[in-house]
Image (cartoon, rainbow, N blue to C red):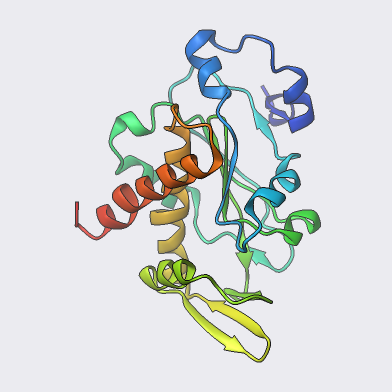
Length: 221
């Protein structure tokens, strides 16, 4: 089966929503809300529509995780490789990757650049988005205290530049951030079969990323 036949748009998925995919267990997994991680700004709820045309990957019976790589796009780079992701997932307890079907390194498009996002979970798939090749993110609003703390935990550094705010990374720090925060946060969403409220799902994914991402990678669990 080629990638074109495996991938569907969000609109196509919505039309197929009533179809059975893989019995009740699979249907329950597919009904989980999608979630865009960190939103790289304070507009999480409003930015969801910009990810509606992400590739839909049909769940398969094969229990192994599939990996898809798209070109990052002009001026952007993927902070991690599939090899990085595969190794990091292998460090998680097996039960937490059992329901994960696909990890995709997605391209940055002009529409997505309007509301850039680090990662997204959709049903049983996780999507990781590229970052600027300069490894410097520029914002017109100051970061929230929690954003400053989180970036510092992984080596990111916020700086004010006139009326702008810049978040600076190194290759090592952005890789650490993606592998031990963004990726694990999204895997947390895949494993959250209980919460449907946006805030509750974010709280669970934040806890999951802290416990199985940051603390585990620092030997603090």
